[in-house]
Length: 567
Image 1: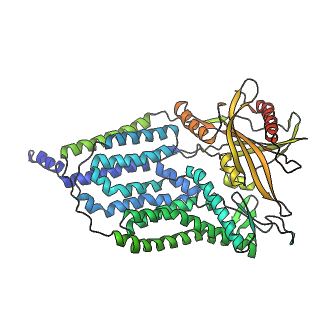
Image 2: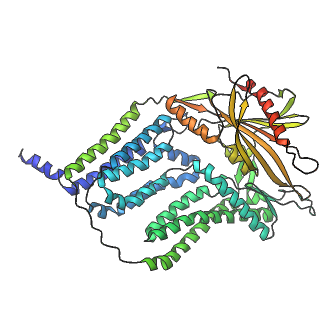
Image 3: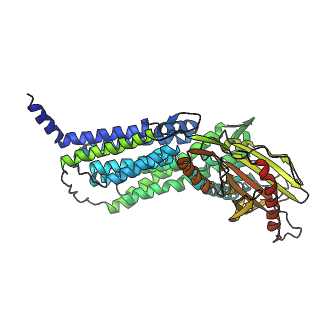
């Protein structure tokens, strides 16, 4: 009796079917613990740490456009379940290449935990699942599971891409909508991402008097693009058989999303013209914009147009492309099972690496401190010869920015110069500040030159800031076109007085100081906008920018010492 027990255990451990099930089950448990259970990040600093998936739940609750991310893990699970029979028939022949991939994944997992941000964790999730497939299954398993593994990327909200990709999409959508509206007899002018009804002297209408539309980030196509990319990838995988056809369908989501948004903007403009802006857009109640039923229904047009185009393209690809490339696939020669003993060792190593990584995270000092603002937001009303008027936050800024972001802004003027000085204090959420070289083009400004510049901010302290030379073409009330020019100077100030000249530099500094100094900067964006005076002859004064720059440099020297927080 006692001698048969070890024999039974030995036969079980050497049974490939049992090994298959243990590998699949234990891998699923490890991934769930890492991504769905372990408290990973403070998604805001007044809250407790949440897991990666728990944080996405919170983000989706705040911004409904990201709910589609939560559908990705169940879809991945369903895709793997559909392959269950074929996976159980695959030989277990794990590759040692999975070990460096797992170690790299756990490094990024720890790094994200230490600096308290989810994006390294997203990368870690992809690397960890890739390493598990390689180490425990092998190359043949990776070939079979490549699409479900790649599909997992749709779980992660790609929020940084909104700044990088959304602005070009917003600009293209606004310009294309303006072209279409002008072609169908609705005169409009485009300023950045804004669409305004054109001025009409005969009817006594100023520009924008009939309607003013703006292609804001939720209307830019970027968020609908993510969900449409996910749908096109899944639909192509299930409906098409060749990779070229799937690739074409996947890439089509980009122009289809833009086409849907173009139709939406045209409908909003026509609705505003025919029935009024309150019917087509909605009405403002205090600082809150209440969307109308027409506006909400127009939003579904994006998906209606895109899905219709996707289904039509898929049918065309099935008839034209796949019918030509259809052939009997060659028989796959599967490798033999690797050593059962080696497979158990690889499974033990996977548990050791992931469990050890979680242990290191638990022992890591996570007493993350949110730093105080490095600048005072109390700007004086008088600076040398300049007097000022307060310029409070607009309702649009309150809608676009996080609730705890503060803006203090004053317009300083003297007889021959005006300077709009602004301080934007970030919220508790990291990366809650926007970059001026993104925001200003969205308002219609075009950047002709952007360069670093050294400034004196009082005493012997010098910093590096970013100088942008800009211009904007506008339509005057009498229908003439004119060009206005300006300079914009900006930089970022951290909690300990450190400065960064640009947006990406301040993001890198945020992560490096969180890792090394264990502090989260409460950044302040300092901006100085100087409009340039037009010459009476209509010819640009070559010295106007140089004179304005000297004025703003002198102004900064007077203002900044009054804003520095005394330590």
